[in-house]
Length: 175
View 1 (spheres, rainbow, N blue to C red):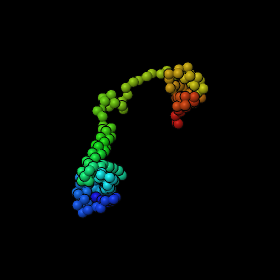
View 2 (cartoon, helix red, strand yellow):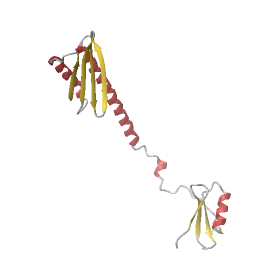
View 3 (cartoon, helix red, strand yellow):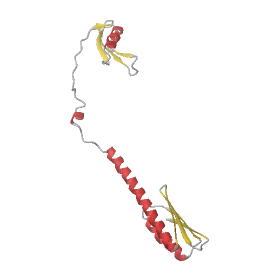
């Protein structure tokens, strides 16, 4: 972990420096690479510690004040550790939910027979012109297609409604 310690109106002693580095090891265990900016300052009788940690695109920040600088640093570390654990738990929960969505569901026996013919309908095929077939299909709004023998060609044709709901398509065999 890269650590930068700054003192405002306070001289950073070797003891404080070592203490901060030792305490940030608790945070370092959560990340492979992280950076920490530590600002220590004194205002009146209060010792203020501000720790800002950046890792994996995430940012964590804690600011506390106490009569003792070491106690203030400890509080910051506890706060940061809580924030990191909460974020980690949230990410793990999201990943788990996403993986559950990708899991295969129990196979429905009805879905297994999707390639089988489950219904047979019988139609009377009458010889007529394609224009007459359109009129006949308009008479039956619940039907989507009509099979007929084209009077002009003598072949079986299908007239069907297009998705736009206004127009029709004609299916003719090539040969």
